[in-house]
Length: 428
Image 1 (tube, rainbow, N blue to C red):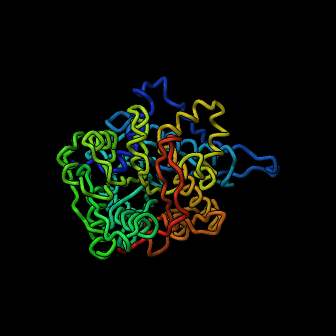
Image 2 (tube, helix red, strand yellow; image 1 turned 45 degrees about the horizontal axis):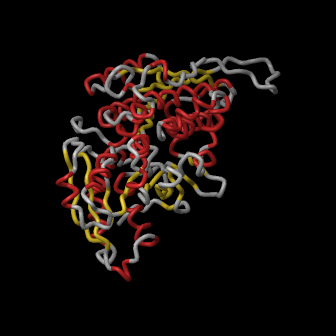
Image 3 (spheres, one colour; image 1 turned 120 degrees about the vertical axis):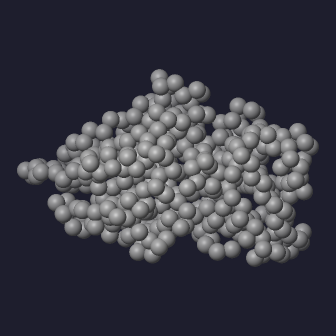
């Protein structure tokens, strides 16, 4: 098991350590309390009937090394559960949240799952990267649906009770390089672009590098793979920068500020940097270190546009949560400055919509694991423009179907949308 590594999704949740400036409890946005009692709407005049409780069990980290980093993701889950209960969005169903503190200890994950089961958990959720590999055989045996942010292909297929919201890491690389070849690099005039990368040996970066090399091998007229350099969590990059100095494009480390600074100090300016959603957790360090000039033009592949660039339109639930639970604009600002951690609210919205779909299909009194599983396999999230943004099916367990490219802008010190919606590329 790959527990010595810190996959990129953990790096994403570490964003709050950067954005909260030390992370004192007093500085954290207050989590709305899960009430467990739906509020009757204005049209609820009939005699109330007994509600059915559906329990969502969350494996998280409250006191371990990822505790502060998990803060906004846990806030998002509690807020979405609150929102569904407070607005009676699933008539006849009361959502209850149970959380287990794994302390980011792999040895406590199974115990946490059993603890949640004892409390009647109907659905398991965990954004911790250590959980899918441990829990997969347990949820398959118990036939309990589990939702996670991301997982390796071998855990998701053949399809079972584990559902991942994101696309596969290798597909991220394929999609990014295809867009570059079609929109950013004129390989017909300039020949193949030299591409390489540097990053931590974290269980995900290697998948990106392997996929990029595979794509270059499949399209030698477009790209030449120079090499991928993995380190054991170093923050200095001189040897890697020297090895990549002739690259036209470089996949950069997720904690990006030291790499881009060293690259500039070395006098190199040739490469366009390549990043993904995980890197956004550390944009605060770019601002603090005054490095927007160094990252100008960096191409980010993301699940949706950045705050203020369309994210709120893609996931309107986030705006509704802000309106209902965060009247203080400073709280909203803190959430946004933390990167996309609170964006987990979009995933939790989809999870609750699946429970709602199950209730509509079989009736609240008849919801069980089979009903939730069947609903998950038939769920899709469609944008206003008609695109099926994400879906699962009996043969599909990684959810997202579209992404966008955003570009770092030194003048505005933000990320600007550089592409339309891009279909995820599944093969090189």
